[in-house]
Amino acid sequence: MTKDEAKDLAKGLGDLERAVMQLVWAKGPISAEAVREKLARPLKESTIRTVLRRLEDKGFVTHTVENRAYIYRAAEARGRVAAKAVKRIVDWFCNGSVEEVLVGMVDSKMLDKRQLEALAKKIEKARETKDGEKK
Image (cartoon, rainbow, N blue to C red; front, side):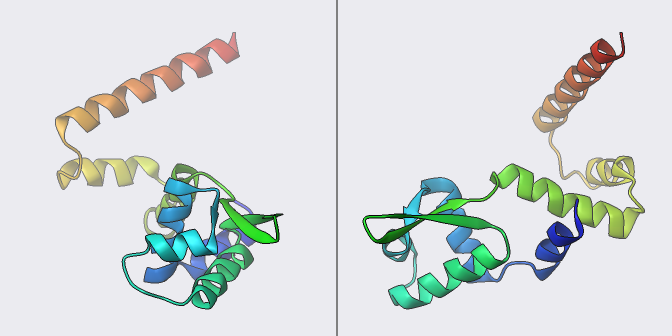
């Protein structure tokens, strides 16, 4: 993670920014007017444009211009942004130990049996891929 990425994640997202990002990830590419229409609370389009501009400044969205309207897209997939946020937490609280975080999640029963099995399969697949690269 670059210093700029860490800085952007450290800024975090407010409640409205998170709600807007959820729409961009789910419905994007999307205009400010479409975001305004889909939000659960009534806000002016200028407020939404301000939020989108801030999200762009933080590196979460990008835009293009289509027929004089700004169309916003997520700069990165939701999972990748979440992974970066988790990495920050791992670095801050567990000195970079992903194992410590995963064991803590298992111990606190944050993962059910199905999730644990899916995780084990992904780990095994990654291990096989890595072993294949070494040969």
